[in-house]
Length: 249
Image 1 (cartoon, rainbow, N blue to C red):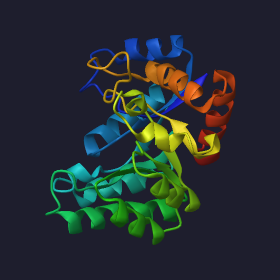
Image 2: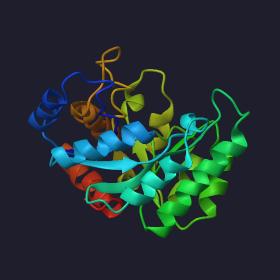
Image 3: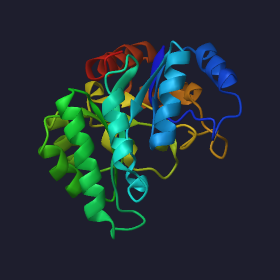
């Protein structure tokens, strides 16, 4: 039984979340960590985590929302950081893919949330896109650990994160035909990564083009087990152990 360490199960994407959660359970997925991205989704993932036993959540402000967040949104994270099903501050980080014009604001928001994670001893779920150097420099300032979500960098960058105490998130991207990240993960010990879907995004082969959900962790796991030449049972044991080492679930 596998754990999906990163998904976005919101009413915005799924018409009937009860159906989705039943599908996930029937697929043998034992737990999911639902990640918020702004005040609205933070509220929703909290409510859903209290409704479903197998769901936990992370709350945070995504860098794409840097121009819209308020101090009240930060206060919301602080006020709920110790709620029973909240296991991390996330999804947080830096994203310079579309623009670097708000770089300073992004770093400020990122560091506010890293400070919260450090103060309350919570792991972080890190989004970093075209911002590797700044992400690393920000993380160095705080005593935090967690997951580098959807890691797709070089082996050298992977080693830096691992040395800092982070583990890497593998999702459906690794199954894509022209993806080079599989060459990186061939070199990385299984103790240093976890599995994730990023649902409803990044649907793995052979389902690309369809909406993703946490049941597809099984497809990602099958690909990774072949890549690493280990059994599914061993992969489940190792990655679930990694999850429990990072998150309080």
